[in-house]
Length: 559
Image (cartoon, rainbow, N blue to C red; front, side, top):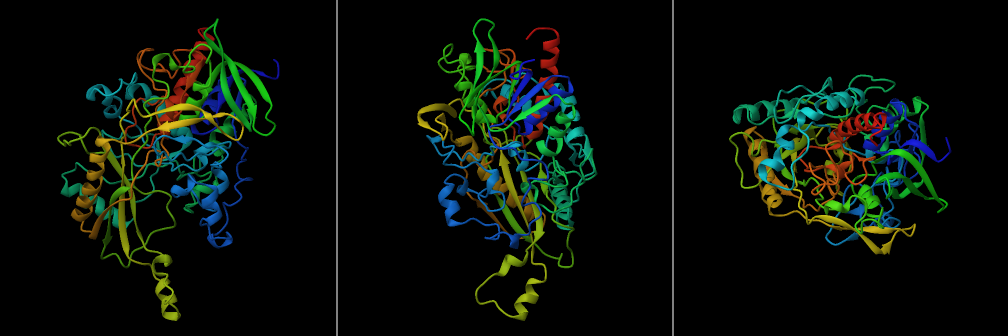
């Protein structure tokens, strides 16, 4: 086999791409895994993972120079000194904002699997059926029963800790033992459950942090430094989990610094022949060929590749025959909720720095609950005691001050809503050929906003949060809305959706492109709606399922 010929090519090495590489190689396919950024090796390259805050020159915070150099990243928390090299250099990879969109990217092997929030929830039929019931966009071509066994499969391998809560709206999974709620969270959960007649539930978050050793990975050490890379392999990432499994097969070739500029489309066979790669270091162009291509470059980058492919056949690029490519962009809107203080727990504390919090599953438009908007939201949050930084003032000096800061502060609890955003056709991305990136490639133009449905929902995110915290006995409860722009949730979805029909969707029920049947897309771009839960677990399950289908089709010589 020639050096540039493989059985399968995977574009992108984040959560879904890592899974695609693992599954393809374990099924015997010689696979090329491409990533546009540098390689980050497990443990060796986690250079800040064991540093204390005081070991960073600016104590982990941002500098004025960083603010100047990162005009997008500075808009929210990702801009900080501790893992700056995990985030894209904004000026090298610009994009055009027709409307404000905060696009936070990680261009390196592992992608955002190294920085993700790790909350891992299954969808239910409430989510898969929503579009059809509401008459929004198009119907999902799958239901919960189609993906449930694949949720089982990926949870077992990835290591998801959680409690079996028996809630229809949030199906239970194959869980490792759950992390614990602290004393305030337990009491608040019990009071909320009682007050709302068992219609609202506060549970421990279901997270991709190990609570028991798994494979060669060690259980979580409660350091809460996950975004620096974990030397213990205690949270799921490409580096800790799927890449070692793929490498173990001897079937994987990893090529970093490889920007896929297009999928090479064969007009005669109506299939992809392979991909064209621009070497990010040398600017040389290379072609690689394979029987099947998995496009997992993350939502917007996957769509960029499609928009830039087969333009001699379709003006709008590969997958544009439906008129849906680039459209129906979604995110989760958040940054609205409530906070209050808890009294009577002054003699109580908690163990370590738990990298997890509470979760309140969606209860809006469920059962007898009816709202003046479609869909709904869940909450994430936690209870904790104020730390030493609570009282830093220039006039506070001396022994009494030091003694005071040696004692834990006031207990408080906050919950933050995460709401579903509807798939509006007009929320879209297109190619801006007039603007170029560092490599002379056209950039994406993003035109996206939340609308009345989401704005109505945000009011309830605050009022429902206040209602629950007050019902649980918290004091000084106040609501907040810190403002939201699409992209801030870092849950980009849509732009190459699944569907029943090549006239209304880009992908079929197997994540297979209608316009090129040997191309599969299983990252966030495939999503037909957004639900209100963190999406990464669903990408994993869809990826494993799609690889199983692709390999079956290869054996049958259908692709």
